[in-house]
Image 1 (cartoon, rainbow, N blue to C red):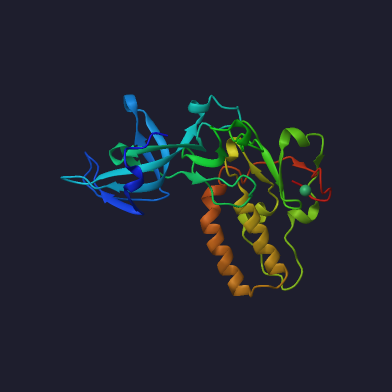
Image 2 (cartoon, rainbow, N blue to C red):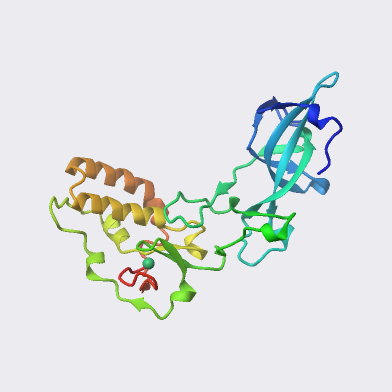
Length: 274
Ligand SMILES: [Zn+2]
């Protein structure tokens, strides 16, 4: 990493407000912000601001930033499970002049082991891994899930994702109780067809189901019904929660609610279907 002369004497600051050339608005750049930077031949690079330092200079101070780089599939000629929408945080750092910053950027954090995180809109960048480019032995790429080519199912028993390719041959009929809502007291009137349909859906991700999958909708639907069956909410609280929940997920479910699924027996905790 090349340091400007006297880098160690520059004053550190957490934020810096300035206007980029060609822009009308000011932006407050902050430490840990994810940003787009301009490279040669108008190529764009993605980075994380790790430090902002001010060099006292006349007539105006010069701003420098320590950037930690994200790598994309193009940069690493990557393994096939790296998605085209994916960035990988590296341990490659550079100090750049603030003028090379182009804009802030939204890069979503994807928690690969989670089943009920918020959806990540299609076509947006996401990050899930760190990769060492300085020491190959430290590379932390693991649990390869390729959202573009894999379909995975989540087991609510052992809380693990399984590749559909690996659980073929374990097909099961969906147990009857999964198709009918619980009827134990206080027996709230579960009448919304979308909520009932959600109860019988597996948690799936990858390919058409998208990077994050349908876990948030399915898991929340089951929780809401379970809590009602266990009498943990009053009837009116419950109705309100169902209403809010359904208005939030109905659009997300459109593509897969009427789809018929094949169900599998979990290879680890036999009694669960996925
Ligand atoms: Zn399981």
